[in-house]
Length: 212
Image 1 (tube, one colour):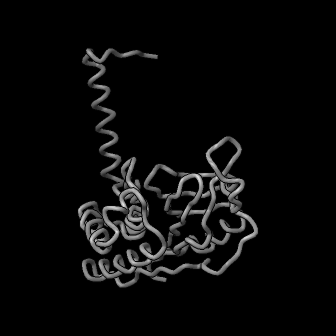
Image 2: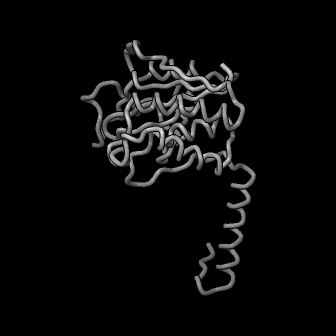
């Protein structure tokens, strides 16, 4: 293994080469990475919607920046408290309606749809919940599901693919792929200690789609 000093020209040439490769990769695939929230803010709900729109419509950063402002301004009574308290289901519903209006008025997209598929459903296990999420995002439909996670995170995330063993996320705080067995519907089994799992708020699930 070659060890390079930061003072050597080879080190900086190598570092520049890596940076250029990463930049080129981002340029070639500008929509392949979710936008990230700040470490201490509670705006995961806003970012979940922005990342969902990014996934479904491949909208660029300038438009997402404008959309971020419009979404925040649509909830004037919730700021600044939302920065540390986060947002609940009523606010997410309002933001999704605002998103539909923005996409129609600014981009001519009138095919953005959302609903709460599990509002009155009961699930026997996390596995059965994820199977139902998978049914909401079949391969032939452009769709994602925004999901509310409870203990230990209290976080809104975006699922875009479900397999029998794992869930793939487009997430604002670094979640990428988690085993189905990482989740629970039982609060007594949820937490951040070894052996505990991530609790799902099954009724806080929003299915978003483009065209259907």
